[in-house]
Image (cartoon, rainbow, N blue to C red; front, side, top):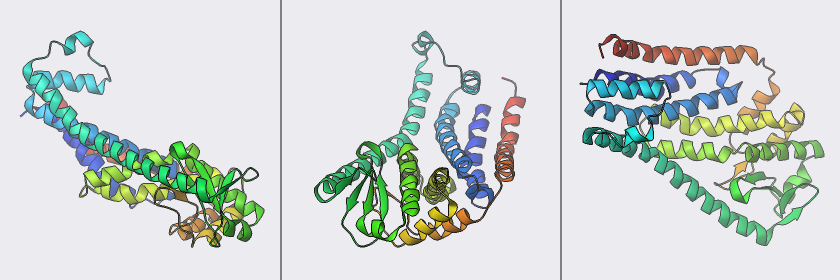
Length: 303
């Protein structure tokens, strides 16, 4: 067996099992959600790339596998002429790797298209029953239950119910609108689609199973942090309390929802940024050390 299968195998075990185990037990993730999101995204990308690399290394001879590992770790693409001179076995390995990689990519594209169709249908409904308020910069729906949500993507817009306008004070409404605009400007729907598709493609993988629930919550916390740049903690927390019972469509981001209580407690609890960042970097380092033995074992073999 090609010993250059050890690095991708180590990365698969690290990103697919070790990293999610560390993240779901870490306290720092809720204090620095953007760093935690970066770890989830990087883990998903590394897992998919390693899963595509592993079968190619299984069928390649050791010398060819070594050249492939060197090119990938050095981020050095071969010249186009060299791609035309590959052997039939190398073409087979390349096709197999691309086939494996196409599975999560196809799932991601399908999730995006499904969500886009749902948002388009909902946007058509809003054009019929809603009215645009230039003062709020949002579409107003006549509904007694307080709700604030947004449609990201091409149909981007913030939607406010008349019940929310009547219930929320001006600072609270501004905080809720800032939260929703943070979702739109941050393109958070892309990460939600990635997490959902990854969980459907790899339903029994800890990375996909835990990431499917952790990523949406972290995105809400990241939007809260972005909104706090323009509003006070009290205004955002009380707005979440008033909107907690409101429900947003599946294809939208809602300011309230079931995570409101956890987010309110987080917003009203002061915390230091430096200490959680340090713990986050230590978590990443610990995950990297888990793959180190296999990578060192690979390098110890003669090429």
